[in-house]
Image (tube, rainbow, N blue to C red; front, side, top):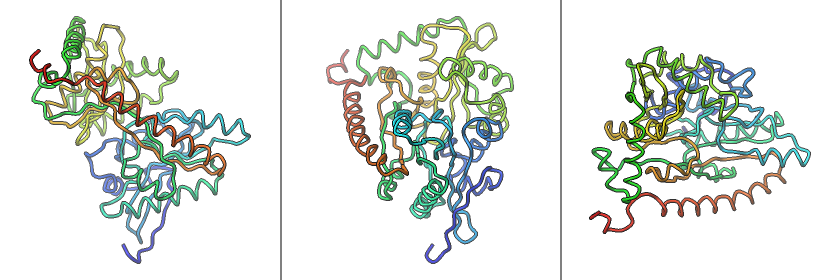
Length: 389
């Protein structure tokens, strides 16, 4: 590395970069599906990002002499939708003070609140890459009078290095289920308090009484008609949560072409027709729950398809954890525990930066306290005598 010429390029399309090079920086084909070329390209190819979406790609690539050693998924944003680390109050405060918050720079996987590397580097280049990319991001933002740079759902290691590079550090929380080497779902239930254990059994029984069957599909088992059903479910949930769904129908076709082996679909089927479904992505160490929807309402079916079936599948396939998306303290009673997520921020206006710095110090303490309290309130046994219940 010593003596090499480090340069940073900005690209407006992934097609300008090699899939092989990108994935070599992203840790290979199976580690985290969301930072792979095929996932990010599916977003771009399908029109889920790009013109008219408020997400404008500006992928950054670091070269040492002529070798690509690092990349980052960078976007210029015209709004704060689809990010899951909320800065709406920051935008409002800045604009109330006479500033212009948008456009801003976002370093993230669009519409995906999943922790992963954001400074994607070949082994041995991590620190050099993060330093070079951070400097380039700040320079591009300054040169183009962007208000800010936001690196969301980065890894804890990246957060530590980012702080050392002068970026502001923000924390939040999610709820993840951890597979403690369970051989089956009943073994997991045996670790819970009696009340929580009984409640989960009741929920599963209610869900399975909907009058049909629950099936999982992955890889070549996934057929085009499954995507038709999943699109219907996604639209239903998207219309209720966001008004307009973020993803296009073409995105699901792109998944069928290149990512079926990365996907687990869980469907509730009644009279041969899917009536509800959940879309999960499969990583090397985690199963990621992403979208859910239904065309019929049945008690507890959401919990069964999104949480319990995912846990069943993770146990069967030796997956270490299930990440069921953003927010949701209701997950705590179902075996999901709070974990810390990280993001990094740079603000061009020095006065605004100091105000946000003070806010983040208080917020980090509040998040830490909240995680400690919620963990103590978790569903797992607290007293040894429960073993005899």
